Image: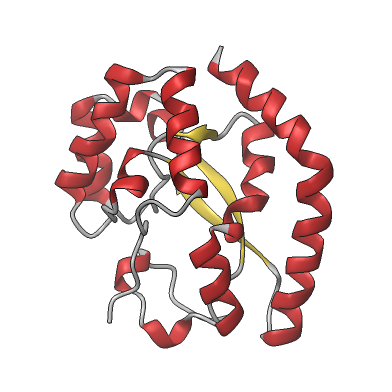
Length: 184
């Protein structure tokens, strides 16, 4: 059921999302060097690696490191807006269509975040698809505390319903939580 809902929402959003992604990509390119779309290896269901797509919010050459460990100066001015509005996540619609992600689930982490990967595995969180948003994001918990994050992600396992997904998506759309914070 979850996959069917994800696909239906993607198909509804596609005609709006594609032109918006194109406009935002032009803004990214006009204001900073490098590609507009970031391709980054992330950890998905059952530890499988996949390429996650996002609008680039950081300067080219920024180390591939968890967001909470990035220097604030690495984020571009347009990138700050994209992060705050969560529009940088729009290209992940492609990841959903490919079956690598869902709209709601634990945020996919980097392969280097071994501690978080292990906590998620221990709690069974790795059995579900990662999401564009999730319980941790609307609660304001970022990846700087792997154990706390994994435990919060695990709460979703007991209430993984369409109704709960809608609540999480609406909370995200209306600004709940901050997601991953840049150190500073």
